[in-house]
Image (cartoon, rainbow, N blue to C red; front, top):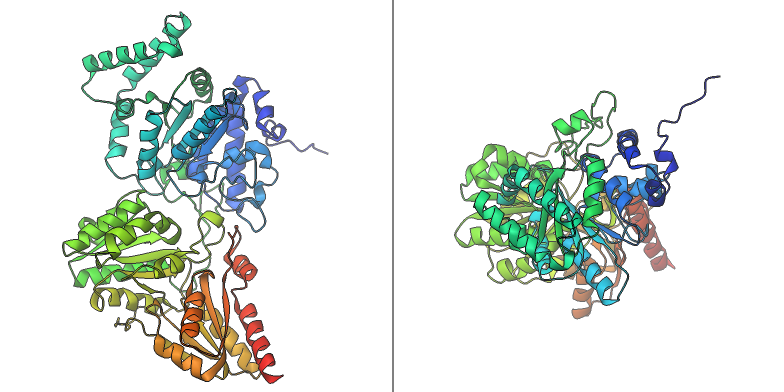
Length: 637
């Protein structure tokens, strides 16, 4: 019988970074090759973030080989580049559970492993977090602990990253910032910083010469870290002779090294080993290829950011069966084009997610009226406010979880001035496998407390179109429309648009004893539960509120007068959401009615399929039906 060969002879021996460090440095290219093959095998069957992690393999291996993790800290930025990190830190055999219910998180998470020293779902936070750790280590008088921030996929362009750089420059702490520069965010890079990094790359010969000079002087004991200002002054003098370009990082007093080939793992080990002995903040610029090692991903890294299942041999992405229903994001994108064709004042704005939110339809039709501002949500909001201030009508499309980063700007720059910015909030509710950092759980709660803000959610695609139409033609202030990831319930959605009166809901079903108030697409689950209840002999009223703010007081008054129990159903946090608003109204108006609330509980929800997570939170047909039956039985006792 032929003996089965081990496809990953080195990788299967690595159960921790200590095992990796026991290898000879010449074995590291093979480790990288096996990691790539492992990721291709795993992610072709169990979808996840593909291209970014493929591009960061050599960086990951070199970091764990040189630095004493977990004592030395690696802080990942945009954690979807950290799959190799997970595999090398004891989670190889569990990687098949990645992004699954009760499995591994798709992002670094400290509750999962001591090697994950900071949460990494949103972008641009690594430098600030790593600097805090470095200063804390210094204050505690710890033996030299290295702290490394690995920032990639255009996160360096985020405002928080610049704030961290500015603060790091004034610090004496040992902080290494590894810039994983692959020319890409999730979509193509935008902005002048990307062009600047390209220009730095063209100065590679100068940077290489400078680094070699430093190493030589250090080897000859002609310079020490204590007197490194001498070499920095020499560098600046040399640069003035060679080029008039000022390096932005050195201008901030951060030592800059690079750019280097981020896929040359042996050289990276040498560079990291040198840096390990240096003091003060350092930025190491590494050039990588997103999707490295898999030809289809290298050819189209945007498509292969998170491709879903694919045939690893042919590169064919395996798509689910098309049932004719549109995705909510596509309804938004195509409707925006319709509106923009009618009104030249309409523009579209997104923060690095044109494909994810389907602003690409607008981008193709009206490229000069479409703006991708990069990973800069706060800027996207204020930029939209500036557009609105001068008569433009901006539709600002940002994922719910990322819009949290622009909350101050929503209040200060939009709402106070009552500007007509329409926020199209994608990925609302429980988004599934991306997990705790990506669920759109809080938008209803954090937006309904903002004065001047209208907050709405459509039950279907037709109402998404109608709300976008209403924001343009029936409204003169800030307007928020939230909708989920996934498909709309109906196939025939391109109906003629009309205004949905602000603050008015609709009755979907007459009933007695119990009334259910829902908002958004979760109302379709309510409708199923109401139909099931009818078969059991319970006639339940159902109202689609459409608007959370302002609430339809006529509906609330009717419910207070006619029913004994009202059940509120929402796919947002139960704390401060629609249920809270309805209960407050009933209490204020002295209604003698029981209020039962269904929503996302007051805790963070991990990863899993949307169906599993909604079931866990009790936001599904079965739980709604159980509560309805329970209330009817109480009434009949």
